[in-house]
Image (cartoon, rainbow, N blue to C red; front, side):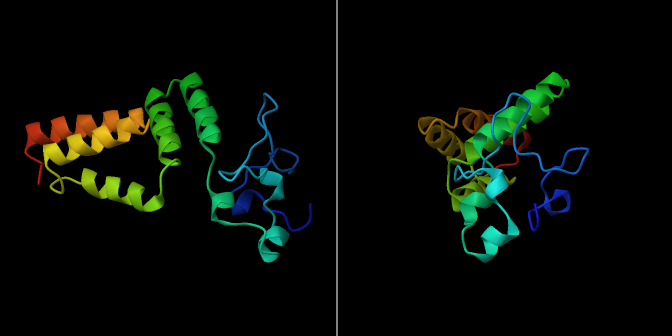
Length: 145
């Protein structure tokens, strides 16, 4: 397809050079916006038809990647991908605030516990568990603010 994004631009390609637009089970690869990946072309960008949500990964894609990681005996990567899938559901500024809160010396254990409760209340259970674990580890190692 002329002008479409290819492997060098970040999209995987098949051995024959064609773009990957669905996974082995026939599930279509789509952006966070729901737009199918084959609609994300240079022409669409030039026409103003591609927005920020079209360039963000969909949580279902991250879950499929987590399954592959598990199948290849990489449970840590699978868990990271699942946390990333949860993070797609919140605003970028909040993701950055979580990152900042998790930096050693930036938060008290109480701050992290409050953050974890907020994440859990919104269904981000994996992220909440990580923040809870960080609060415990930081307190034991004297890394709290």
